[in-house]
Image 1: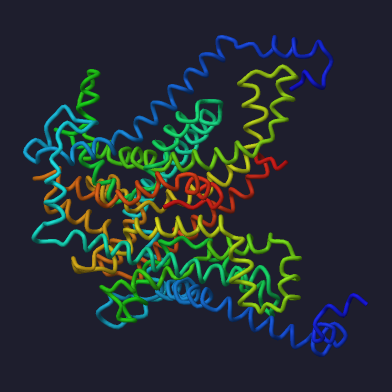
Image 2: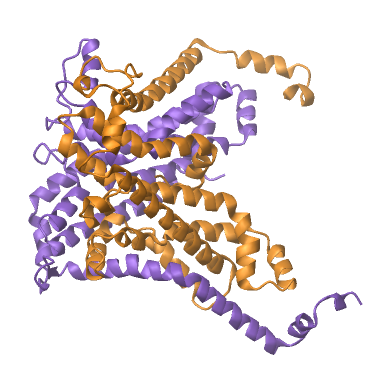
Amino acid sequence: MTSTALPDDRIDRQANPQKGTTLARREAWAGYLFATPALLGLLAFTALPIIASLVLIFLHYDLLTPPKWAGVENVTRLTTDSRMFKIYWNSLRLTVGATLLNNVLGLLLAVGLNRAMPWGLRYLLRTSIFFPVMTTTASLAVVWRFLLTQDRGVVNFLIGQIGLDPVPWLSSSAWALFSAMIYDVWKACGYLMVIYLAGLQGIPAVYYEAARIDGAGFWQQFRNVTLPLISPTAFFAIVISLIGAFQIFDNVYVLTEGGPGDASRVIAMYIYEKAFRGFEMGYASAVSFTLFVILITLTLLQFLGARRWVHYE
Amino acid sequence: MATTTGPAAEPVTIRRTYRKSVWLRLGEALLWLLLIGIAIIEIAPISWMFSTSLRDPKNSFDLPPDFWPTALHWQNYLAVINSPDIEFMLFFWNSLKIALIVTAAQLLTCSMAGYAFGRLRFFGRDILFGLFLASLMVPATVTLIPSFIIIRSLDLMNTHWALILPSVTSAFGVFLLRQHFKSLPEELLDAAKIDGAGYFRTYWQILLPLTGPALSALGIFTFLASWNNFVGPLLFLRDWDKFTFPIAIATIRGYMGSGNQSEVLAGIMISIFPLLVFFLLAQRWIVQGAAITGLKG
């Protein structure tokens, strides 16, 4: 009998369903215990805040005096807040521009980097392009503020060398939002490159071989093999870049401080200012709730639209 | 490749149809130009920052700019470190302390919960895990205001706990590690059970060592996110001696940005230097991790 090699209680447990139940109970206890720390964190700093923000929408609360019931005042105020609409328009332009540029550049850079080249060159290119992703957004925005200064700034000096007039990057309402977008693309396109690179490396080489045998050139391979097979990666990349870009805060807060006027103010900054400069916690919660609804709707729309263009193998 | 399998005539046709056209060469040249051009644009601000941080403060705004150090005025670094008004190295210590605690806490709580959700059966497991997944959809901007009120009512304003407590766990980390625990073979757990290993031993000595790549990816990006966190310190910290690097640098710029570009840049260099070293050492894991997890710093 080989089964005698098992310890006695194991055999007991297999034979006796009663002991099996204690085992199941012990497993359940272990499950709750292991999940508890994370669950507490989730409850205290995600679930509770969400419920609290839903309640706050119906309150007037300035942190100093006790909260007062506001009914739907905060919600109706949203519909007449023309400043908020203007700021949402800024956020939308920044989001669309940054998402588009980041993803197109990220994909092109990944296609470029994915081809045969000496190991050292690949390392150098990847390091240079990815490193800004690791740096602190707020601190590097300070660097870009110096670079983009109108009078003695480096960027205006360089474009002056090729004969262009200095551009008021941060001080003109026509350029400020654009500058924030440039900064975001500088900071984030390396990250998208890495995501697309992983996607490209997941495409089996046989597809390219088959396409080549059928006589497909570089462009046709890109159009008919790379694009369809990279589409799940692109979908993921676009969803997360949209959600990220809509919540840009550090970038604009340091680079342009939202100015001039409201020209580059974005919605996360507006929420911050309403809550922590104006101390209108209730109204700020109402605005942040609109952002939540917009992000959820955008994500759902993308999941619905994905059926048209995302191909899974 | 086709030479070994296909008929003898095939390789010839392939070569002919795949001959590089003018357009293809042009496209390839453009791709190279883009790659090298972008790499230069990405690195230029950083090398400018380094070069300018080494200029004599008197000439810090002089043009043309340097992208390679022309002066070696290391005194700027000493001036920042020994600055009489602010203890710069204290920011380093604060940033490091908070990032290390947050990273350790997240690795522990997320892997524990990942084990529970991925490997143990208990009543309500799927609903609880569903809660974690749902919370991934909630943008941080939305929980900002209530989190502030909670921290304030816990009397944790202007303490480092205000930055640590909200980050002791992350729904994303739980999700990532649960997927990894789930993908490990069942035989491993059976073997552990037969050898009489309890739940804690199975988790700590058998499963955890096998989730290395996922743990290191989560660890790296948690550390980065904490090191680079700006909104948290902006909301919760008031005193200089509590500040972390990002908030300290944004504040210093207001103080002396107009007068002394070199010293501000030297301060920023000090704050990103640990990241640079870390990146050069662990680049492979960082880049892989970014791709696996879809997280960034």
